[in-house]
Length: 240
Image (cartoon, rainbow, N blue to C red; front, side, top):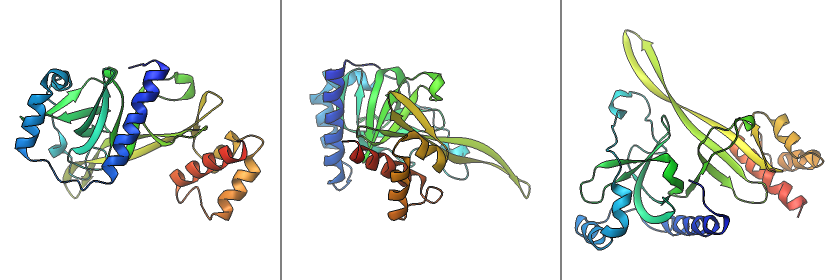
């Protein structure tokens, strides 16, 4: 859901703050009594967050892996829903269908949130933003994790595809992960497929960026995410 620039900046700052606090806290589940108390106290504000349809869980049909981000379970996070920031909620992100779910604090039912009402969310230390971008940049309207937030930001779209397997008369499904990386430079999203393509993004500074990665012993094939983030970070340092 689009926000005006000032409100978006403020809310995403709050998301970062919630993420930083979450990183320092032992993830012990709150007691049911405290959850019910908080829900009752904030019912007027939070009821909208829990008004969606119940999520239809199909994960038991997947034998290898699971369709969610990082964990089968809900995780501590925050979400900007309908332009309102909700901190300290239990979230789960379906990477097959690009659905975000919130755990109802009283009934413990997983509720599916409407994508068009979500501007961004955090799960643990990971910040996701909803990008509705033009197809010419090869980016689908979806949720992307922001890996680097400098002048030349880096994003990744996490996906999982359910693939059928047939081995030794055993037919089953596997959740196979796929990640697609993008660098935002000069108001254009550049998909990164190779080291050569990565260096080409930083026209005029490609040799310095390549030398920096070599000096740091960072190989694109071995750690694509680290290479892209380090390249963008170093490029921003060069052009400050």
